[in-house]
Image (cartoon, rainbow, N blue to C red; front, side, top):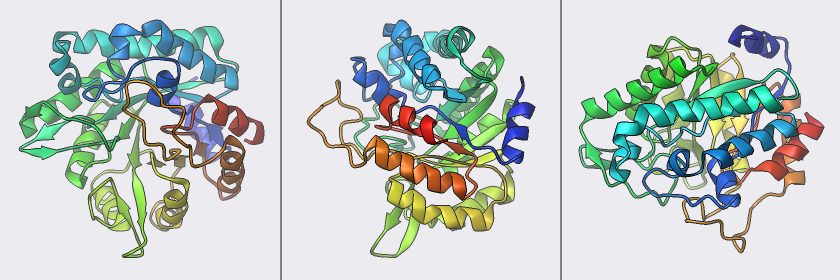
Length: 317
């Protein structure tokens, strides 16, 4: 089983199921989140829970699981006094996924190694990456940021992931850093965009505060590098639906969608059960059927779209 097998299934028109939330699923399993390393700290404090999380997704019958490495680059770990453990903890993240796959996978399953720019502060500009309440405390140079991303991508590739998932919600510059680092590893690369529908301007924009037009940004990226798959992630279902036709106009390769549930407690120490989730598992599954019928090759979930959602998703995909 290789990435070529995964790619062949996508080329054949199959729709595969990606796992759901990593950080908020761990949060639901009583793992405290951290504003600097978000769920990355759990590699040090809660490895057995991470493995159990992968098991729960595998028991749902997913085709792809994601390593808990979204926020475990050197700049995430150094402020916690864990910088010297960067290699060890990222390898641990991959090994936990590999162990879970070996023991609990119900079907051929691939492992995506997550790389992002979460938590970076470069040249005075805060890169909030995935979470709107992230508190970046470690300011580093652009060269060091690039070195950190290269380092993490290389570690994940060497540790045995099947492909790299570049998850960046910063500016196009930071997204290019993440993509370049992943490409440098030699593995297949998926690149993800966080998108949002701006009702005032009636356009789809990128990231949290970047006013860049999504279509323009995608064109720019595709002019420099061709990824193996383009993903829309950590975006509301509404924004995902607005962006999908634009993506189809510019990209004829595989598409992955893994939206978020629009919760407001992503980086809270513990999950606040009083916080409303804007979509139910049943509603999400109905959208997934439409996406599948529209030719989307991979469907999963991001923050707040956890085990309950993926169970319903597997039933309809």
